[in-house]
Image (cartoon, rainbow, N blue to C red; front, side):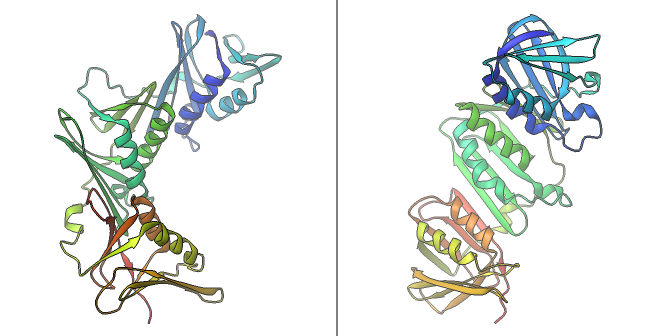
Length: 369
């Protein structure tokens, strides 16, 4: 293999695929990036067996071929180079690759490319094309609610349902639930239902932003999903097991619908949360026409702030995890936010005032009187 490519392009593409490089690899091959040069193009690929990333960039290829190099080290070396172009050439006798740019010359030992797993391909399989902006927004709003506890693998995913002209994404860690439903402008021409790892979707969100793609294609294979956006292909395993019936988790009715100025509610929550340390809850105390947000941490201090709220009826006090509440408020757009409540021991719901396209259910924390 012998080629020349632009350093800036190589740095950009390596920063993408390196996110799939394994940091705790059972085999050295999973800590590498596979380089494959052919006919004016260099492809890069990496995988940790759960997530795979592939991309291509233009290159002047004198000799085609493939080689596997340590991923993190390769990215650091290329990023440090000072010239606009990079020459990469394999040296078979030395079992290494020469990387040259300006007056700099590096030799990196190659890894065993035969141990690098073949990544799933979407070719010749029926897929579904979705607007990239819709995908990215849904991922941003929902993926944060997925669990990070590997002991409950089903909850580490985002449940994705697409059919007709509707896309729905759902995630829950059992303490909160986020549901985003989007009405699309055109028919999808198929159906899709899968529990996709939240980590993979977060990476897809980064890819969509970096590529500035208009659309993204998704193809379901046995136990795998493959996304294609711009020059990047992302593959991920699917999560086995039954995802909770999220519709049953959402209450059918509420006792109080409280309209709040969204930005003020968010700022008050952020301020007062500074004193909700060591798992202390954030207390929301409602009186007719107002809300008081308070927090207290023993041996640290306390804080409270009162703001206007369209609350009516008997006073109500409810406690929430401050981080979960803050993330819920952040996820709801618009000038006003609707907080729907039943009682101090039942979950609260955050949503836009005029729409149910996004709903964020958060479990309460039992308060000590």
